[in-house]
Image 1 (cartoon, rainbow, N blue to C red):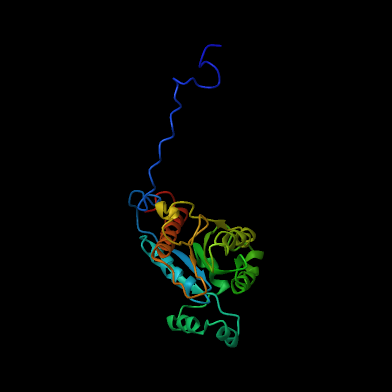
Image 2: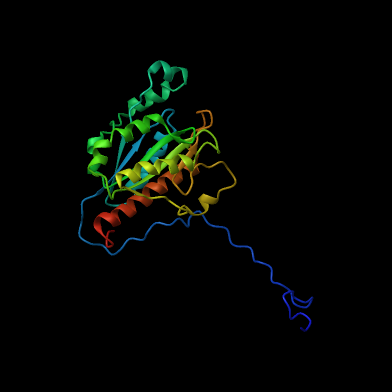
Length: 253
């Protein structure tokens, strides 16, 4: 075999080095493009159902609501899951102020019986040991009659979460919650990497994952950052766009 003709290149044959790839741009977020205008239709209803102890998930829910509302013909309805802990326990946990703020906003309590009226859902909750908080678990358990008759089957749903630390369950909290959707026959809608460069942010702490938006709460005093709120808003817009397509067909605008 001649020189350089085998598996190894000769000195005169240089192996080209891989070229650096361009960085993703944050403005390259992906939202399915609208189709041609058609006749007016009823707005699609996205129920944003959340539980929040210290207020972090509530702020994400507001951002999700803004994202849904930015899509013409989509309506976000905020619903809160009630607290199950006594006020004395909330006081020891330093959560009374957040509970008072929640009551001042007068967000309606979620009624399981009304869930079939929604076209899609975004559920928000904090993590407890890498899974959803007990308050949210209790709410899902209260939907057993709906599950028995598969009243929510086929409806799309997604999650957004809050954890205390980077390793506190940003992915597992959403991942383990998928079982709730599976028993209802619902469709899990992740955001993937549709947020563009924001999903690759390395300059600052950022909650969220391909499963959904998220926030790092720390000891409960760290508020959501600008990019965490932007990701939640993107998730609302993304979900509303997909739900419109599912409800009104491929020609939905």
